[in-house]
Image 1 (cartoon, rainbow, N blue to C red):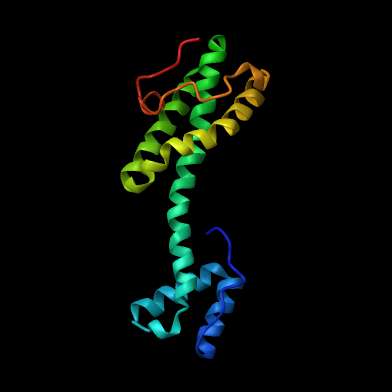
Image 2 (image 1 turned 90 degrees about the vertical axis):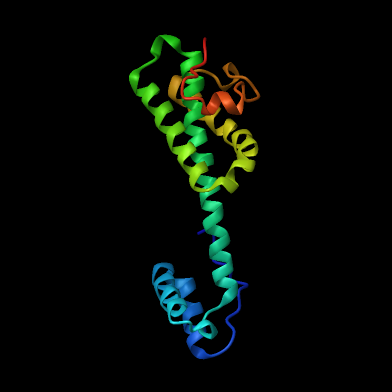
Length: 162
């Protein structure tokens, strides 16, 4: 769920207006009621624009999940590379877990994969900030561009050398 558009206008009868009001005030209740109406084939009671908006938001959620995991993964790869004396099993575990979850998301939602290069690029600045905060190193210590290929980022055997 990204945002409830105030521009979405209820159409039709008062039941749909009540459902649209619920959409703005209690999203969980709206989802339950909309699902019930769908199952009962009462399509005229639904606001199709609201449903379409939420379906699109669900797709965006998958992409954002991958990007959030990339931030953590890239930060740990940077820490691994730039603070080799501080390497720990915790860092290795985090790297492995993020890779595993990213690959799981890509398997579950393969249409996210074409967006991976952009997601990596978008996640990198946040990863640098996180790595700098975690290590106490200056952000300028880290490369300005992503120093790892997409294949390296996702390769469960790859750990960058110092």
